[in-house]
Length: 175
Image (cartoon, rainbow, N blue to C red; front, side):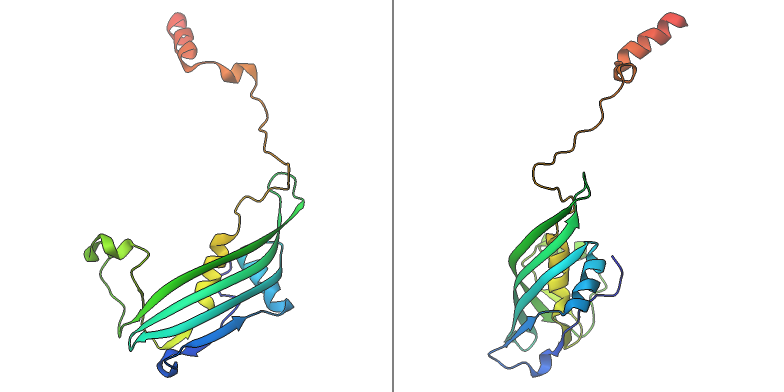
């Protein structure tokens, strides 16, 4: 994946209304092309994310997203185009801190590695497209296959199937 994200939608959490804000991320054709390149797929035919950001406290924010996308990938066996529809929802919680923690996760105990612990952010300027892009990239099938296609490796030659113990016996008999 190229490093620069193909989409960005920055909001200021400091001026977020108490009721929250709903946003729709629906990239145009050029942005979908950059999104396809960024994720390593052949094409992103459709992409829409509905995001809701709510203020839970002065320093905590709730984030919910509903994502629908249509992607085209190459089959890992035949290289034929494989079309798939991705539809998923996810939620996160963010905690605004003035400086990022410099201690490793182990210093905070096992709770720090759990999913229900709020992610730390250090600025009220927050890119709502970031979490959507992360989850979208993770939802893409890393090994897409055309319907009915199965990988069948070439059979090994008979001499390659020799038991390791038979090879050891042969070495012992010659020495």
